Image (cartoon, rainbow, N blue to C red; front, top):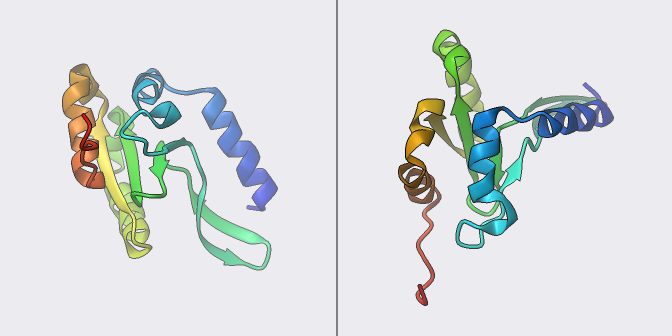
Length: 127
């Protein structure tokens, strides 16, 4: 896919978040998690051949933490092999993938702790 098409696709995903994405985004946007900048539906190109790009669009991405946060709804119960392959490719590029089931969002504090742990985020000393 060409880069301009990837950008359009990502924008469409950002403009139509799932309820789970919208909920978690309230806690991650505007650098709310200890000043770490998370992006939502940001394309990560893992291979390019001429003008053709191969990419993944994770739910949330923090470049400074090299962390991807994926929210898994029921569809992921049926595509575990595909998800595992995707995670292996991203891990090869030095990224950590944290998978959170939508049901886990009922305890948002626990989810945020899980993200902080995988991102090696510690609270600033003044907190």
